[in-house]
Image 1 (spheres, one colour):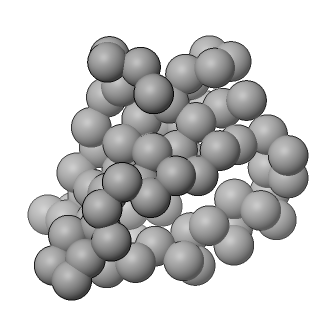
Image 2: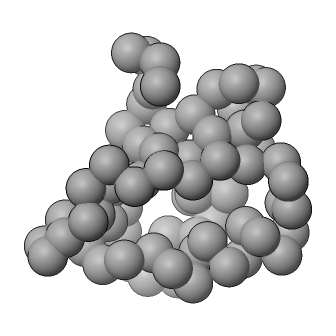
Length: 77
């Protein structure tokens, strides 16, 4: 994990905007870069969406797993 990873805290975003922001942030990454997603629930459905749309192109590492805050580093491989 790079010390320069951007934090993307989506807890205050309206739900319909969250995935758009996440995929926009992911799309702006260069190879080997990543960001830390901060959320108020386990983003499992998001991971399934990444697996469907970006198979083999991303990394997913839990840094914190609740109960109130989840932090996941999402990277572009």
